[in-house]
Each structure stands twice: as structure tokens, then as C-alpha cells.
Image (cartoon, rainbow, N blue to C red; front, top):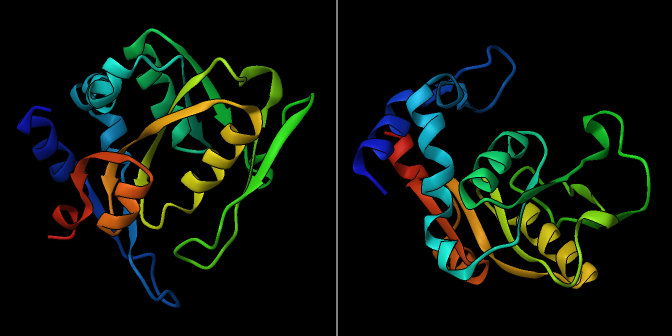
Length: 183
């Protein structure tokens, strides 16, 4: 991955203080989506480590995954499957495979669902997301893939913020270490 992309990701990132009554800063990655160069380079950079493994589909969770997933899928020339969360609006019609994540960094367990007709035993899946801190949602997506008989190749993220053993266990590659965004 070009060093210019990493530098640009860091420069466009912001920590935002949401105001009184909050205990922590909130990440603002909106600058990544506004920059046409970053937008053009994200898909190819995310999939580069997995290209030789020949994924057949990209799977990504709502909400930011719905932007990154298609960028990665387009770079690979494969299809995209969205993982839906009940709180994100209307769920898709038809049979769904569900999984619940272990507790995430906020202690929440997240329910995720994928349309059955879009994921099956012939699929070699690349999971894509913007940020991984605990790997909780990634684990839920891997569970869905296992239930559907699909093979998971690994996970590509923009920012890696999880312990190295989690990244190794879940085969996570990233474009930038989140520690470089805290500076």
C-alpha cells in the first residue's frame, strides 16, 4: 500500500468531543469519504493482501461497511453482500442467517443478519470494515459464514485497533494502525 494513502488517512481523520455529558471522544472518518483520492484508493488497497486468494464475494456490516464493501468488491470484480443490523432500519425480506457478536468495546452484543440467498458453500469470503477494536462483529460475520458453509479468507479494515493476537486469530489486515490516528 502506498505510504501516501496512509498519510492521507491520518490527515483526514479527526477525534471529536461530542460535548458535555460524554466520557470519550468520537472518531470522525467522514474526511475519508469526502476525499476523492482516498475513495478511489481504498478498495484496491484493502483487497491487495487477499487478491491471490481469489475471493468470490465481499461481506461487510452496516453502516460504514456498506460504503467500503462495494469499493472492495469492485476492486476485486466480485459481488457484495451486506450484513444488516436490526436497529439500522428495515431488514431485508426473505430468509436470513443471524449471529450475535460477543461483547464489543462498549459491552454491547450486536445482532447481524445476511440474506441466505447471497451466501453459500461455494463462496470464498473477504470481510471488510472500517475499524476493528475487539473483533466482535468480525466474529459474528465469521459465524454467519460458517453457518452458510462459506469459507472466510480474512478481514480487511482501514484502521486496526485490536490486540495483535486478535488480528492474527481473525486474519485481519489493515491500512493504518489506529495508534497513528491518536497522535
